[in-house]
Length: 147
Image 1 (cartoon, one colour):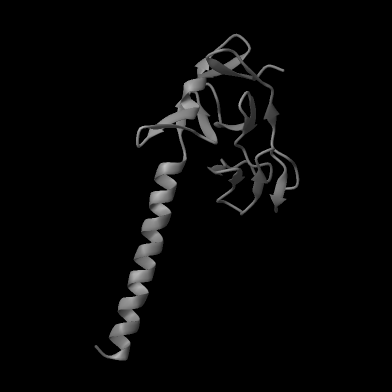
Image 2: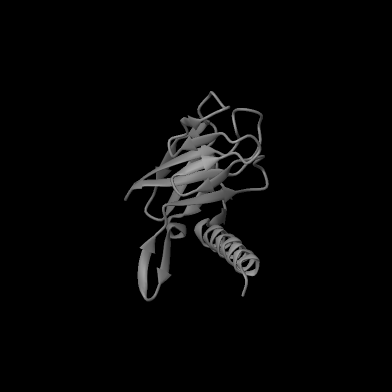
């Protein structure tokens, strides 16, 4: 193998490995949930934050909630055992839908980033995300949209 073939093969291997890694990470990390309409908001079962892996019950860090009545999804983040935050996934810069990745949200349109509390960590956005009060019952999380 000459130098040119070696460099070409190595580059394609790196690009393929990086692409596959990004694809696998994005496929397995975000849980999408259809919310149920309630009197004052939208609810999801608490069980959506639990999943089984190799016989063990594990807890999700966040879920993304959809409903046909909502223009944008809602990012629900688990702060502690019984405490959750809910953020409108609409970028405050120009109104694009945000993407969730662990404990932060990002806008693929212009690069704005927000932390799990909705505060801007990277512009061009300047305003924090809209947040919603969250209450929990014994078996569900209620995102209060009307307050």
